[in-house]
Image (cartoon, rainbow, N blue to C red):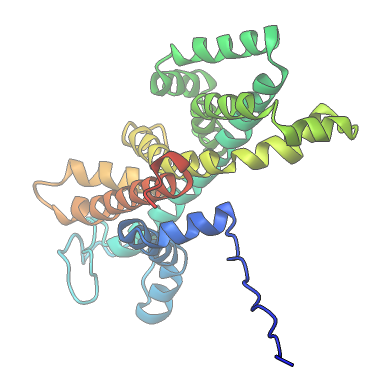
Length: 300
């Protein structure tokens, strides 16, 4: 009798989820990975840096030394000091902390408003969609920065809370259009019809099924929106409508440095280089996320 052997079982290759595939492709983009590492380092620099400077060197952003005055970079003051003798490195750290808070808060406001508005218009459709998107078109016609300047002047306030809200309120229109287009392409898919057949209401369908399937474009746009918000805040601070003394952001530091750049160039160079490099890194990371999450750009 000839013994027979059972055929070896061939295991199917394990499938990868969309997020696992996107993460694998993102890691292959060295520029995006480097930008992500730089942003992480910059967050540590801004959040933890002032405490380290105070503990190690006894430096802070407010202590004045008129006798020392404005001095160039040295071993003790890496970014130099301003005319009041304050350490520019610590002031840059504190300014970055405030600039990042403005950027993340205003972007979060824009995401909440834009995603809610766009998903509602895209799912309901019809005349509701037409009316809601005509509002977006009208708002697009306003020069947004001028609108913020006028509104802050009318309100006669320079509150940071108002600044956060206004910057977020003028940056939600593009997100609304992106989410609307995504929802309109998904609202008649099989998983939506199945949820509707199981008795799910419109709110549940939008929140549990449609918005999660639009997270790719939302994440990409949010990453690209952060540098835009930072530039808007820097411009408003440059005009004196943003962060007010004694607080400082990168925008106010650049504005102060620009006034004295001929005599004290280090007042401008340090904050400007840090702000510009952070904005470039955010743009590179946003481009990398777009390439990783957009199926049409896949090369493998």
